[in-house]
Image 1 (cartoon, rainbow, N blue to C red):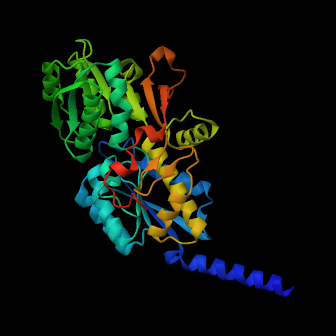
Image 2: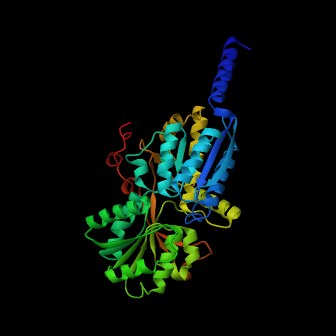
Image 3: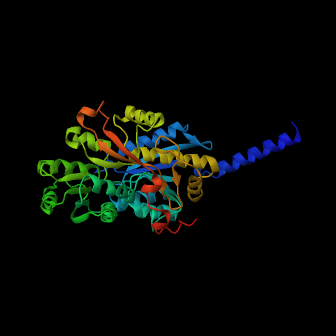
Length: 401
């Protein structure tokens, strides 16, 4: 070998060794912290775990020569439970990144722990815009949606097509409060009036008193500022009380394919909603959706598709820099465009917000559907820079970086 070739080989060996040395414990360990038995178990839950496994498998099961391991746990929608699991995972089980985290109160609690421990947090399920606002962190990203985007996607459309007076049925924790506030601001800007609201606990089974309040208000639109099982139960009981037959409209702020399947197209037809991904966008999105469907028997929700995408991007960033240091990895994630089955030309901003297109959907009529999971028509594709909060408007200290 020539001197130049020997020198190049030595440099390659040194670089490879350094990259491996920067991977803690000789492996990458991902913890999917999710809701396995509560209101968000269908939209996240074991489906999010499976989506993460698909992402790992598609990248060969290893990064920078190190194996990738996936574990999971149920946070039961309780911040104290989620915090305890996160602390144990970081302190004793060498978890490098926590993924998913539906229920914003849990995500906000875990975000602070991840910051303190310099571990990555890839939020797909938590929707509070505070995650990329004043509480933003250099080690966390918010991937799929947030309350600001949902509100701005629905607000103007809802006033134009549904009516100019609104009443909220709101889940009583940080996600619901943030969603109601954001949508109220947008509705007001577009000339609508919010007549009132009723707060209900997460996991409510009896909505009768809340629906009676909404009916008595005389509002043209009843906005459901909740998600998953709460949304399904509210819509079912609203039908029993004759809400739509009486001339009021229902607007679902967060709805997932499993929710529509639970309701059935006959009951859900015509509902407008905002979604973070479109499984019919192109061949790549359809391929992931079909792979997930074959393994779970269900179409992936935007939360599950977002977990898949966030993990792929995180692992690619590790491969790029040869380190699993959370701050460095998230910095690298910001430098790389997001192009996969979930998003095209997505951008991770300094505040941790991944900006991508959102979709205004309408639930199909039974006669329009061509298959068991053909549920939505896309009314509009909304560019991300028009629906997510501007970088300088959230109060994130990292915004200027």
